[in-house]
Image (cartoon, rainbow, N blue to C red; front, side, top):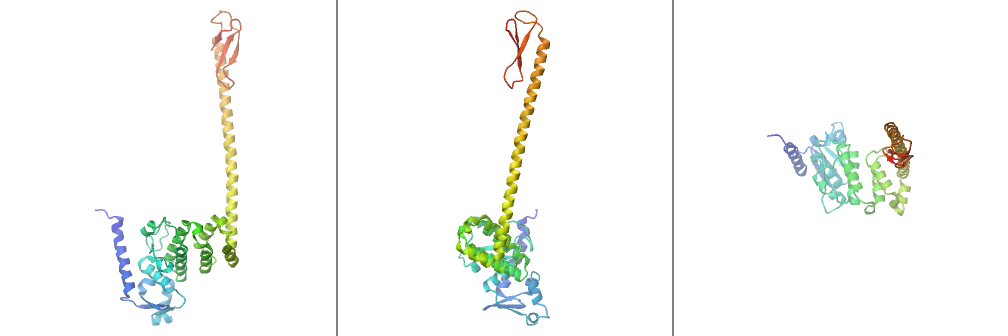
Length: 321
């Protein structure tokens, strides 16, 4: 019996579920993370391999490594809970972060570090057609920022894909774009190549609806880098449209010339065929078939562009074709 893909995925799913239970129960934990008013009993075997931040904190030459305790003062407990859930299971939940009643699970696709450009899981496939809310998108921005802070590459990849998918499938008039712009430009570095380009492209596509909003003027004044990137992207798109228009015009001209050239070739071919036909008729008709006189005729064309001709006897006007 061949091993199906579903069968091969079962061990991985079982391991994820097992680690999820260990995270929930804290059983066999060997490290404590304090975040706000909550404490998380975690396992270094899980968090260190996927995060250089935790790997560094757990070293014995650091205070945290000696005390086996890490205090995160500025981290949101709900966000950090989702980060840990991702580290343990490859899944993170945004319902607690966004405050939505509807739970939305986001699964990392394939193995750790997968960068395939597809939807992340079956749950997301089911929600693919549902427009996102501003809170949904802000939750993915928070998860991306946490992935950057704790140096979890897989989390950044998944969060950026979810951010792109949710943003691109939601009409701009249903989103608080100034809040999203502020969140992205506050929580990402200036050289970010994941969230910022996606956000700028979306804003350029919907610029006519965004510019009249007073809040947009405020946020663009606050984040000059965003305004500059927006202008540069708009210019690049305008240049691209201009080049495409010129190329389309050049292609149209070439097509017209090609059609005219083809028409000219066809006309010349008809004239050559008509001349050949005329020469053949003159060679084959010596006497008129009606009056019997030596054939003295004039050629007449059937039509202005016809390739056929006829001969008419000058004596009795009998047609010969």
